[in-house]
View 1: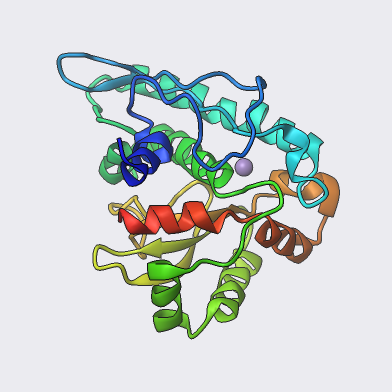
View 2: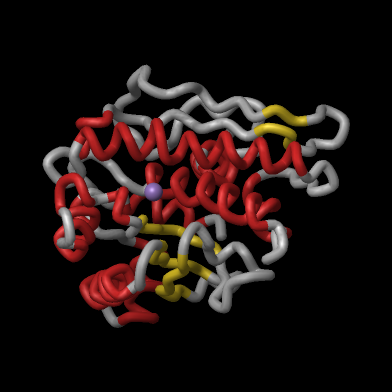
Length: 250
Ligand code: MN
């Protein structure tokens, strides 16, 4: 399996795989999370139970930008809770079938509240963990850099647009950098656990390649009401290599 294929199948896009032993962006691996092993029917590929992938680094690895206590609660309580409730919701709606988390989000509509909220919660957090790296990484090069320069002017302008989307999201939600099928980039934000894959629900669709959680549980222990400080801290630990790898396979 070449690197590009590996990145595609090893990350959030691959929540439908039988085994996804690690998240590709992490430098180190800890035993603090369970190995992903979604249950699926061998005959149909239909996923009947989702599981969390490993975090890929220790809870304290993003210090001082993101504190260990926030990481632990966020990963082991919040994200784990979305996965548990998603599986419960799928049991309650046996007619709703998907071949993976992305397929599920593209099919969900506004009437399936529990699948929408918890499926979104699972996907969004999986992407969030993947797109962070202890120490961060250099700004992107290559095709992603070209697309950023074409759409926003330069990396700084993109980061300003992303900051603004995250800062001004009223209440709980997420801000996104997404690509459309032609590789065109855009910045948007969604409420609650919605995301741009939910084409039956959101106005601005696309494939997320970077996302920031701006629910207060993502930052309140360390940053309290200072959401802007948290967003800046997040930008310091973005793994642009992962973002570029995701862009390459959109
Ligand atoms: Mn969260």
